[in-house]
Image 1 (tube, rainbow, N blue to C red):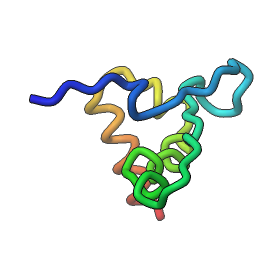
Image 2: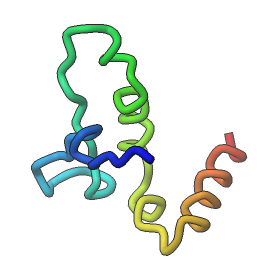
Image 3: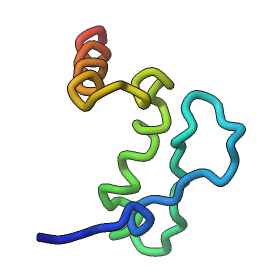
Image 4: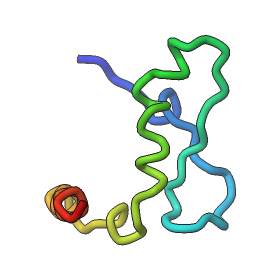
Length: 74
């Protein structure tokens, strides 16, 4: 099994003054397209667009339900 540290994939925003939730992710600078289009860079905008209540859901099931409800409303 592969073990990854979250800091290897994502850089969290250093400031606590963010709109929305307090787990904002900052995009890493990349020179090559292989890194620019890597999964961890493609999901940043979607993650940062989540609401505070979605990110702070009481359980993983509640988090999934909030995403399903949002997708179903589009």
